[in-house]
Length: 259
Image (cartoon, rainbow, N blue to C red; front, top):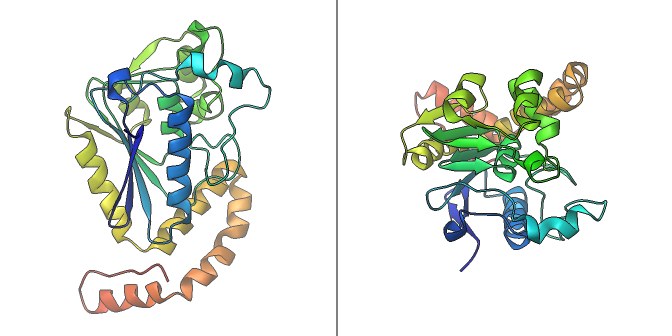
């Protein structure tokens, strides 16, 4: 049985952690399956958005540390193989397409860090989050020390990174770390509805919006300003722009092709 279910649904790639008997603990094999799914999402022109979820009662209990100890000690970190793309975006290039995230139960360590490298997050009420690394003798190495303070503020981030304490889905929603807080069992359907809306929008417009936003965060607002209209120019010459205008004039839903 695969450790990750990878399914295409129209223009959406569903990426489902599938080790529920181990609370979806991430071993190295699971990491590489997720990384391969991210590569597929990036390179398949028919795919427009990803949806990451988990089978069972929990998103993940975190990394299976006994399987990762040697990797962490090598001084180089986690290295995706050929045909893979790091779902933490610690190494290599990041995605140019958005990912929607759905969590339930417990979402610890690597689960939080993968969530931080997604774009829209949904969680069921009662979901518990934590970065437990300081309780295991290490520190978070999948991006939490890099991204968490940007999401929830310096003090909030250090409160949980330095103690290993848990925080709740309600807190995450209050901070803006998640965008939708839903009843248990509804997290996947809600995330899918969001993914479907993204998939029906103009692909070049979606990717351009995401790219501009990422430049502003990683390189600063001035860099984003300088790239704004040069990046918009080829989009304005696309067939999708013509379809967008025509559908508006005809008062109908647009059908975009990503061209």
